[in-house]
Image (tube, rainbow, N blue to C red; front, side, top):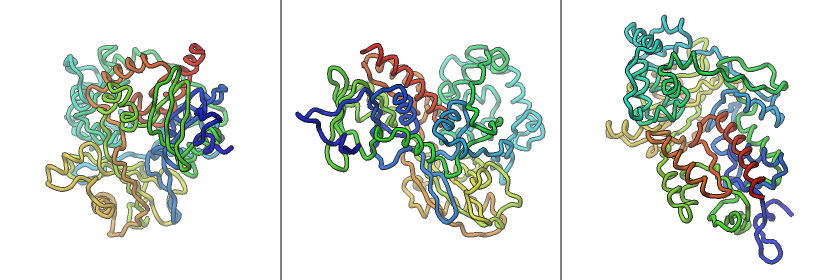
Length: 489
């Protein structure tokens, strides 16, 4: 019997098929979680509404170019590197030069972001006054916390001054979260940094006094070992990782299986769904939702309305990823860098551009460069409203591409050149926003979840949006689930 038949038909007597754990969603979190359970002999099934695994990970290639439509690289954390080695991708790993400069477009120039105290002193990105203000903050000469939750903008302005916020923090927030620094919670979006002050009185004291966590061991198959600041990808793109995980899961992964309803039973849960061959039923002892909050919320509305409402409060920012190719002779020589970020105050629409072919081999044909451009974000509606123009979600692909091309021509091109349009992916809800009150929402989610036997939420709206965060969270959730399964037997 095929995997589709397994889930789209009933056993004799009309009973649904059985599983110990059902994981809804085959992004990197769901796949990693399912693999860890499968390795422990658990009857696990992963159901995914889309036709391919990976969630927001999507690699495309055409005409000698290769580009990412979602995440474009990863920090090589031990948990992620060990997973890569385990699924046989160590020899496919690519590491970008950690010394490649990152740029901020400020007042008509691309200025390198200072990456060390020495480079900060000579940087033109900050004025002398801005550098002195930042130094005072590093040394701990800052105002006391206000006794209420601070936004990212408020926290770093108090710590390091307005120039650092405008020229470094705001573009960084746009690059990581596509977010609004005035709305994101410092305690949630920059938890490690905010906790240093909360626990030790200042950032400097925290850096010195916080206990040093021993580095986790890394598989010997990862050679050479990543150095500080390097970023990772694969020879055929990031999609190699979810595909390798899916191959390990085999018939336990069921694509094109869309959950339409969840019904609590005693014990466990009954899932109703649709497949290409008809309706389906699946009975499970335990259920894990790894899908985005805006997908989980309507699934829970009928039987957990309070939890559904909290998940529905988590906003997501829209982002369009536009891949363009340009001839090398129309660009600075030599072109060397990670990419550039653009503060919204500079009046441009593009959030930033990754110089993909400078990072990883095989991203563009000879004589050309590939650029990944990001437009939209949490501040786009306000930007558009202030200028009386449509938001990026109301524009066509051609209109978004033309905006990006005009701005790249202003920022980067050394002569007029027409771009090669490679592709676009508009993520209407893209990245979860850890806005003010997010930690309280997280706590309330944990409290409600604790009262629902065998039910778990595990997704990037909880403990970090990076691939490394997702893998770490999935492995921790797998361990907790194993404990629950043993205790509930």
